[in-house]
Image 1 (cartoon, rainbow, N blue to C red):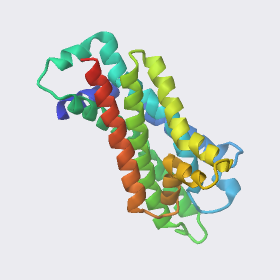
Image 2: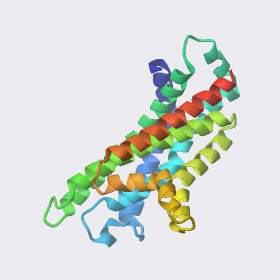
Image 3: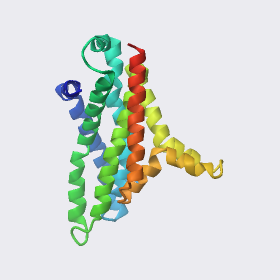
Length: 242
């Protein structure tokens, strides 16, 4: 798994794709937070908080993570190297796990430039340093875990299709449904008491707790379950191709 993890990282950073993705995430988020007139602009909000960044980021990762993960298994199958991997002394779970870790790490690295935003808000706060550190720290933890969940969903989408474009579209669709679609469906309150259960199936409510600075073990366990479920299904679909 470590060998596959290193190979995937080399593919991401060796051809500049990871650098371009990190740069694109940083530039887009900076434009929304500091330059464009919108509800995410920190200057227009007038409050020393990064809350708008943590609201915006899941929507960006919803498109970025599937773009990173779409080639992981789909390209292997398309080029025929997946069947070569089957002949090697490596388990299918190790193949899927190595690719998942590489996608997740690239996603987490996208967050590093955002530390500049934290410093900016910290300095501009009145008085200086007037920023909720616990909420920010909890939000970063939540976003890191959410990236892992999106990565698992992206890997699952890549295992379902040998076409990278289809894998990307399916990954975006699944991430959208799990993060926003289920939450919106529950908000219509069409199923009575079942709406609460439906809300807790989606990502949004569990991620929202982190943005309030609450690192609840129930939310962590939920995301871990989703991650292992997604990777388990991906491993099963890859095994079916063996």
